[in-house]
Length: 179
Image (cartoon, rainbow, N blue to C red; front, side, top):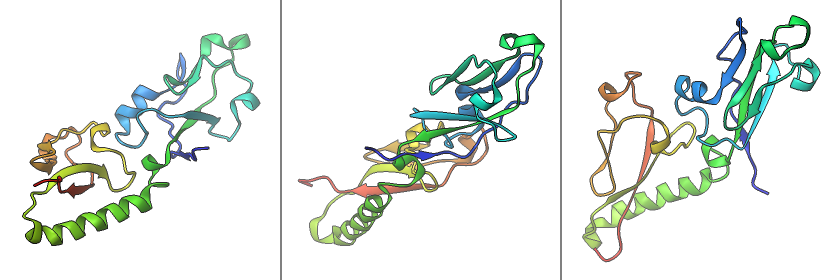
């Protein structure tokens, strides 16, 4: 069994004339890098802590592709949807669990290789860039990179970001064999 972790709770929408819309696409846009690209599960609860079953409302969508949608028009006797919050289950590397220790060992090994470069006349190559907080691979953060090329390094410029700020990244460099 692969262990999983859960994101924090998100409540992006208050019930409106049409219902409560906690859609995954909107949550990804509003919370870049805080939800894994392909969640494995979703959980929804009312802000008062009731599960979907306990709230007894008709739910239009509740899945890892769409997110969560409660539409007022689906409710019985003109009842309105409650205010819901959602969270998503992701695999451990996203939440910083599971492979964190092996990544730290890889960083140590990369540091060791860097120290040995003068002996082997080896050129470093960027092999992986992940966020420091959630270990999200750089390519899934939605940020624009100045350089992200295995032969040239990794660089993120604040001025290229819609938020005005790059996330904090870890980069591991490796040395190709035969150099």
